[in-house]
Length: 160
Image 1: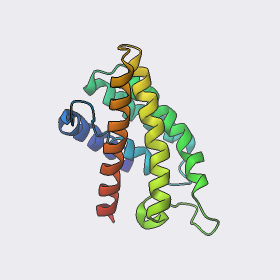
Image 2: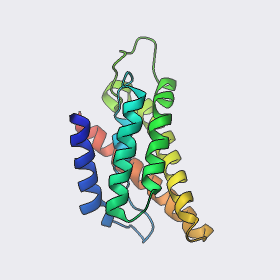
Image 3: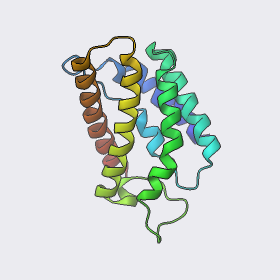
Image 4: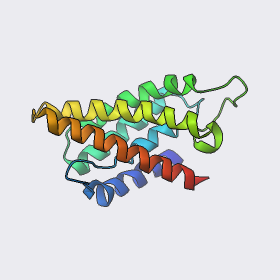
């Protein structure tokens, strides 16, 4: 039930508020990626894939990006458990929920960077098939990555 609420909250926040922010015309914070970062270590992989697809599909409906967010979020949902395993210690709890408070700043930052970079590269590369402009693609991808990471770190720091 919590994850359904998070899907609705992140989708509405992105669609109604954050999706309209375009710094210098290229950088948009993609806060809904934070949804994937929050899955605990022992969360069922099938449910994670399904929830990530649902989140991506709901973002696509509001953002007029047919299938881009759904494909990118599903890939991120698939990769997240394996990426999280790279940053876990043996003494960590099996139901560890990723965050600065549980993982430490550096581990959470690197974990976030890996997933946000993957998401932005896939999302904006798929989007680039419609409009091929390498400079715009690089600016949009890098700007959105940076803005998304800053937003995620700030929110996770305040969350605890």
